Figure 1 (cartoon, helix red, strand yellow):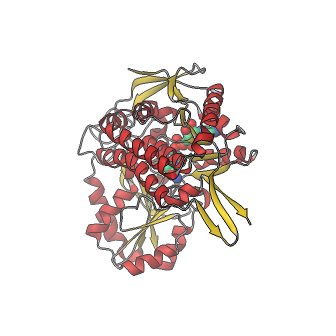
Figure 2 (cartoon, rainbow, N blue to C red):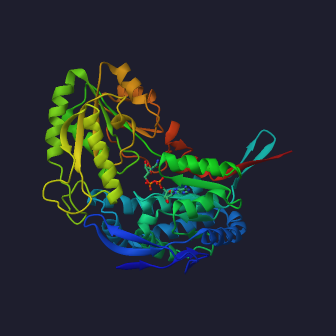
Length: 471
Ligand code: NAD
């Protein structure tokens, strides 16, 4: 049993004022594996005060000093890769494929931020003005459970790149991963107060960060509903806000696609991170002409996917993070059938052979129309909806007929043609044939998928204010 008794404030682990305990589980076994003592609003205020004290010195740092801090953080995270992987496996149940990506990614975001800082023009001349890009002020971050380590590292990296300090409230459900990461980050020897982390409930610690006038910038990753609440609260004090929210990503499978290559890409995008991914491509758009052939191939391919715990290297899909999330996915699988979609593969209940753990059956619905709730709402589990299109214009219209606009996918054989389709999609990112993303390319959503961008110069600028000195 892991007991997490402390938060991280002013460069040190500290016992919080809050005393509420929150249970932590292994989602593959449903066993309680730990408890975290949660911070409260008073702890949030103490962390904000520490970040405020650290801000003036951070603001004055030269880009080269920030690069050194970022590289020290990269090394600190890389040095604890095994412990981080173990924590993610136990508390989150991530499949090996996601672990193989996540931990190097978490270290890599610091290196990418260091490159961004090194290349960035913090001062430039525009006409008769000297334009100076200054850090916006003390930042706060609120993060979800589905990639806890990566989100904390991304937001911390950006704050340091910009020359500011930060208070982070991670998901209360990820406290073991947070603790393991903090032990790593502590080794980087940041100046006290630059990084502060307060475990706590969203409506307590998250709400304090959203409302506190000493926070100038808030960066949030999580659900669209929570994002809306934060945006409203933050408006009172005119905080700069970056919101990375939900998605219902379309995958347009063009008629010229080679299915031997495309079907694995389709499933990788749809079931990424066990389907618990904002960027998952959960609506597959297929032409009427190839509909039957593609459905046959999908059913065959999904039947070969293995669901299992993180400890099984052959498992493609892990458990849902919580009983609540499991129930939510089950309710959508029921809903799809009630709405008249056809269950091609999968369905309610646990996969055969798994009696315990919050495992779901990878599920594909066909005969889905884009007005069904399973095509419009984020399910956050391995559930794919296949929607038919008549021609490419209709495919693009269906792809864009959503409140979301985070990440879309185009699959086919003609690169120029796929780019032409991509240009017509309303999404912050369009991925062609599952190409890997550059670490400094902007990431974020159109429409209800969020506000602003992370990574690279766009992410950095979201933490900066331009100041023009004229004459
Ligand atoms: P969530 O919105 O429930 O919680 C996210 C964080 O917000 C948690 O730390 C939570 O404690 C906090 N929170 C909750 N209520 C709050 C409040 N009133 N004020 C301030 N903070 C509050 O989301 P989740 O269930 O943890 O994560 C899943 C969601 O995150 C999905 O909708 C998914 O699409 C989204 N997500 C988006 C991205 C992206 O980059 N766009 C990435 C991953 C996940």
